[in-house]
Length: 143
Image (cartoon, rainbow, N blue to C red; front, side, top):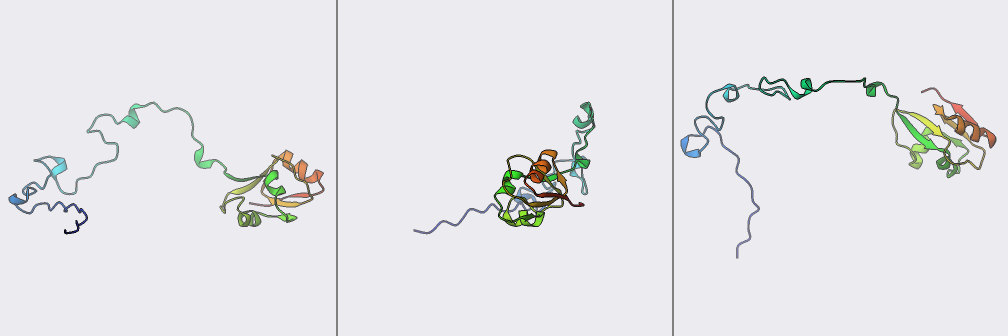
């Protein structure tokens, strides 16, 4: 018994004579804009009908482009570390945050049991208070 070859669909050979089944108009239909070479259409074009994006009313203001994004770490995560000096590079190395251009923000969720020096761009009020209560430092670093 012969082994079956894997199925491979043949390429549509356009404009190769009447016997090919794709001759003359090369599967483009008869006349019209779409049959011409170089034809291209804007995305969302609806044949002259008012496009959906223009029919639907617009409201509000979107500030997504200017929104500040932060890499967030909580005190309970910092408590797991053995080091006393905590910087963004160390947190990336330990896998607590991803490396990015965004600022590091320390939030006060959980407690910290030891005295540590934390370097970050932003601290929540609660996080700063908890760090300083344990005798540590919350050092604000320029972004």
